[in-house]
Image 1: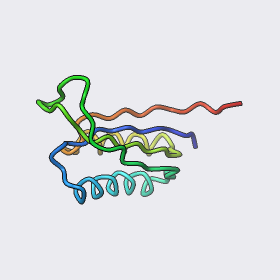
Image 2: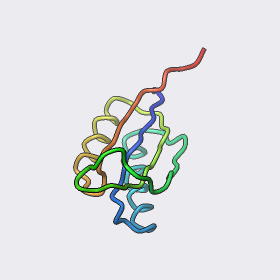
Image 3: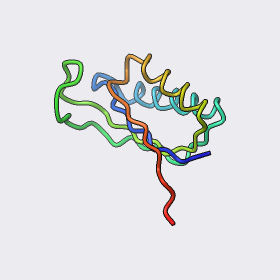
Image 4: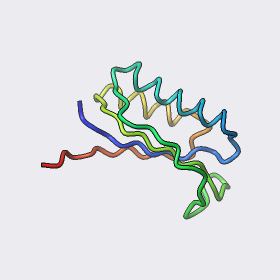
Amino acid sequence: MRNYELLFIARPELDEEGLKALLERVQQVITTNQGQIIKAEIMGRRKLAHMIAKRKEGYYVLIHAGLERATITELERSLKLSEDVLRHMLVRLDEIS
């Protein structure tokens, strides 16, 4: 299992409950597929560098997790299908020696 960092931008129209529900859904996809959540953080609403889907702002959410290949496939599929997620980026964190 390798460590990854997932950053996604959620729609700015979401209220606090909707944002927390989205975060729980993403965490559930990870844990259901034998992933391990290390840290999850809602970074808040921020202005985007450029417009995405006709929006100038979005909620940034950062998750550090231990993932297997099958978990990554299912997680990315789920994020692409979600209408609440504008963009996402999954990066493998190399171990520091």
